[in-house]
Length: 180
Image 1 (cartoon, rainbow, N blue to C red):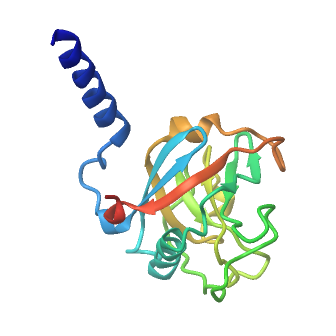
Image 2: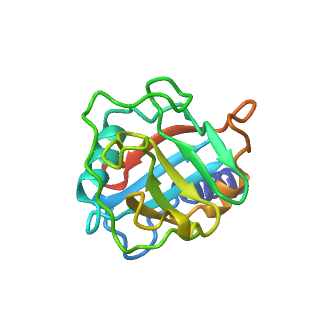
């Protein structure tokens, strides 16, 4: 009986540890959870400054567009880029139209999530990047869509390269409010 109780206790502890509750103060409707090959990343979406971009990331997560998508461009000291669910190499987008820029005064610092785009400021679609370090040269030129609130240690573990050999992936992306 003692062994059975010990096993049940161990299972309960493991389940609660893997569930990782939402960090305090976050709105589940505006939190994106990335389950990656390196661990979980929690992103607070900034619908207050980039409502169209935040909505797009949520829609694509709900469409399972980001599932099994690689981090195709990971540059040490700069950023990790992902979100090409079409081609997986940084050349694709989603079925949805390009988004108009939603620039803000939020600076690009470590953990900020920005939308990738072409030379056209109004060409963001599905790809995004997470900053490893400050990047003031991006301020006011790329839409800030969120910030990592838990999991920068996971971001730091992503394999580097353009593209990395055997890249890390988003295994599953979901809006926190949709977690069952």
